[in-house]
Image 1 (cartoon, rainbow, N blue to C red):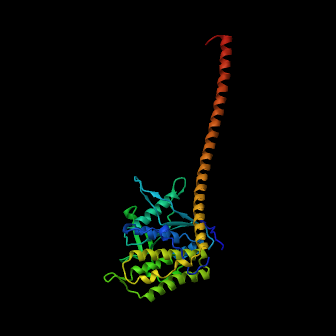
Image 2: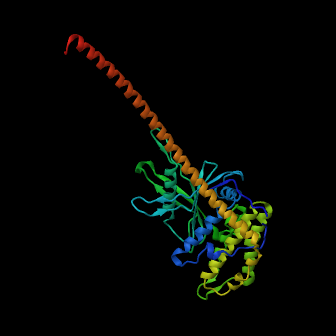
Length: 360
């Protein structure tokens, strides 16, 4: 089996019913306050699949038309808050072909303050990548979008923050559109090229619980159809169409399994048993597991190589500055030697004058 290595991602097996049971290894079970971290981890894994699938998703989200072979650069830099030792980390800021950057912020709960964080992440990225000219600085903000994976109350179609530099100028509106996955069907996600986020269709399970009776409002047959047709069927269809790679399909199924296990573990509702009997892990072969582990190791190697290249670049810049300093030092030494020579010549002339005419 050939392992596809995506050369268009910087950082960074067709088993139709196969999955890897690595939930405990990759996705530790945590309680309440850390639930957001679980969805963050899976979201980040989804948006770092093959460059082709990610580029197509960006085109669908932002209305762009980048070619499939575009080069993606992921900006995972942690931004240190002023006067503190804490850091903030944007969910994903990705740059396409070294030009425009796009910021995707995932949310797993209602949060009216999110626009402040999105603006802060955007500003920190713009500051770090600023174009500095002679008498000005150009801040290039990434184009943002907020992706709601789950929410309980109404959320707007967009968040707006008005920025006033002075009252008379009318202000500037910072607008961030919102994508609400719970309101999208699997078919709509596919049409919008968001197939790599299809595992989060499972978040709808949380809406299908009668909280008073603690039972699922969907029948076992409806739940089975939801998994097999809407999610797994969509993955297989897009694999056949060439929209995603074999590895993408394998991993999307795996992430679906991870979410299923987590939701079944933490949701109190009768009727979830049917999900536990689906998506059998045994279909994933040892070769698939080896391929996945190889690709994860390869990705870590590429990330390490990128950091090494950045360090070497900084070392080269430091060496250049050192060479320039040594050159200036050499010029100063040369000037000093010339001055010393002139001084010696002057002393000789003074001494010769004193010998002939006496001391002045």
